Image: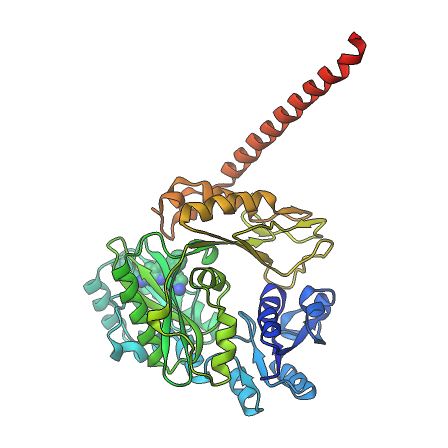
Length: 481
Ligand code: MV4
């Protein structure tokens, strides 16, 4: 593989190109007119404008991207995350044109993109799953019977959904039919597929996911877990590796289950198997994400493995150079997603110009960033500016480093999730490790950040006053003479 096109933008496009460059592989960027001045365009060896700002006129134009590959002699496409990364048709189109899709085969993408097909595929592999119905509801009486067996509350999920879209909790039997009808019509309009199924509702789960790597020779390894329980409305904000609560035994059991999930769909490349962990530390398979994830850096830091390098190597047909017994966890890593969103105003996107934009630096600090001072944050895409990542010898050290790095990250012109990060990393529940996916709902309100900011302003005023009085003393000296 001599030349890779990165079919993405922002921090992940840069992240992929950095590894390609390290491996001596040429890089091609594609960009929309809104991203003309973006760092990923400047960093690439070649760059091609593929259309207007809206992603359906640029980053989602699979045919156009394949055309660019053919014109420039590209032999591999890295899709990053989002956009075309989990589009099985695109993966297939690339392969049909003799270009390697750096990711799994279209079959694996397709199966894992459909929750019921995924459950069906892993069924023979003895993977723990949440009790419920393993096929789409067609018979209401059957569904009601299963709901009563597993016990209310239950959760209705859309088979085509993912990331929480199209889920409905049903508290009691009387509500079952109406909620099911709603779920079906929501799923039909959102995904063009009205298949829904039911599961027992796990009320306070932790979200734990396992990173896997697979080659084309049947080797699969797991690179331990990431915990992503701090999220709001299914949007992750803080991730860490390892989880504060997994024992070595559960870690191994989850890791081995994840490897089986990967094997069940002949997975190739880097993938993530999501699990729920309940209060009694039972874990259940949820779904598999067939891409490199946003939060992959925390795994890289605790394992010392460059996941993008591994993706490229297995895409070239190489045998995985790592064995399970070579892998171990060293230290602790945290990630805060820095979004241009206003945590004081319901996390609404806060677009504008990055008047000040200065990144924190230092040992144990990594910033996967896609912006520069002076740039506008475009309204067309996900408003994530960067990922702030810290690595320490243990969890407390990573937390301390993170709090300092947030202080040193200077952004003016837009509101960001940085103050929200301070709230999380100072919170007793986070620090102690006693939290679940309800963390934000349970503890967060804008008032807490406002109070913190008022306190900080008070401290700043006191510091200024003391300095003023000191200055006065010095200035008075000559008049005394
Ligand atoms: C669940 C659940 C409770 N019980 N399934 C949300 C996203 C999708 N991947 C699955 N999700 C959930 N499935 C059962 N049977 C709770 C969630 C859930 C959740 C999962 C992971 C991370 C954050 C979450 C927030 C709310 C609900």
